[in-house]
Each structure stands twice: as structure tokens, then as C-alpha cells.
Image 1 (cartoon, helix red, strand yellow):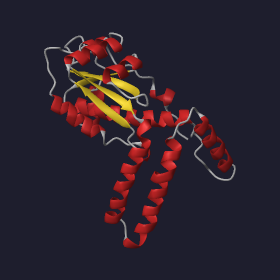
Image 2 (cartoon, rainbow, N blue to C red):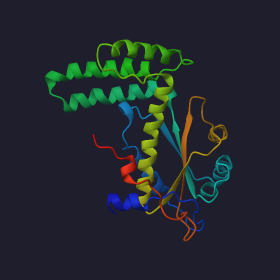
Image 3 (spheres, helix red, strand yellow):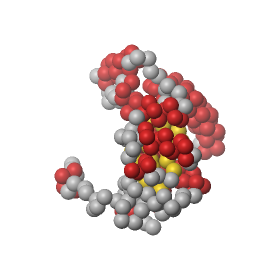
Length: 242
């Protein structure tokens, strides 16, 4: 299929054929593909929980408020943000970059580029992603505002802003997963109507983890999976050329 074919095939399917099982290896491969999605500063502050156990699926269906997509899903993937792992992830990227620079950069530029990466991932990322009851975010906002008086500066650096950044990166991974599933001939439905506290309890997630969305997976049931035609606003209503 072409990309256009995949985009047109992907729909939010809300009723799956319970007699049509999914290959967990295919779903796992699609999750590997999801890792190719862009991630802010390559921090990859997310985790994918691939649920195949019937008992856990049943619990998640209840936590998803009994949505039909959840109650008929053969498998589910819970996309979880992990901003609390920012130091560990920054260190992993830094270790990779040291080797990457050594392999890919001209010898005379390696020292400078490694130093830049050490400052970026060793100091800046831990500073930006750290949380402390909103206080660190307020300090970052004041600092950014002060610097912005003299030159262009990223200003959306509060703790709420950085939480949005983490969820956007996770959402990009979830979208990539759903497109990969469509290419494989499988169907999905992203769900945000859920009891996040119950989901975290079911998956035994730590306090710092947050639920981004749950994606129900299956094969659409003929005549039942899709609720009619797809609606999109007229392109001219959302498109602006400047």
C-alpha cells in the first residue's frame, strides 16, 4: 500500500471480530516501527505496554468505561509517558552520541561536538524536564523571559509546558504505530476516555508515569466496525498560506 492507501484505510474501528485473532509478533513489530517516530530532543520519554492477557484486557475494558472498542479488542497497547525517567534517558542518548560523533564526525570537530552534547544532555535536559511542584517551571519561565528580551528564546518551558512536550512525542509514536498496524492489515482505535488511575493500578505503574492513550487492536467486524463515512472539515477552513 502507498502512504495514501494506509491513511485512508486507517479508521477508528470500534467493533472487532472476536473470532479473528491477531499475531502478537506483528503487533510487536509495529511497536518497533513506532520507535521511528520523531521525539523531542530524542528523549523518548515513553513506554509501550502491549497487553495480550485476557484478564488484563478485561480489566482495561472496564477502565475504558466499557467502550465497545475496548470490550471487543483482541489486544491493546497502553502508551505511557515517563517524564520521571528524563535523567536516565538523557544519559542513554548522551552515551550514544559520544560514539555516534566518533564514528560520523571529522576528527577535528569531534571534541567540540561531544562537549556540546554533554552540556545539552548532561545539564540542559535534566534542567528542562525536572519537576518540583511548579517551582522549577516558574523559574525557567522567568529565565526564558529574561533571555527573550535580547534574542529569540524558547518560552514554553514551565512544568506544564514540558508535560505537553512529552505527551506530544508519545502521541507521535502512537500515530506511527496505528499506521504500521493499518499497513499490516490490522485495525486500531485510540481511546482517551478512560480512568487513568485504574489503568495505572492494573499495570502497576509508578506515580511518575502518565497514560497518554490506549489503542485497541483487532480486525474490524464486517458491517459493524466503522460508524459510517469519515468526516473532515473543508480544507479551506483549516488551511492558511502566508
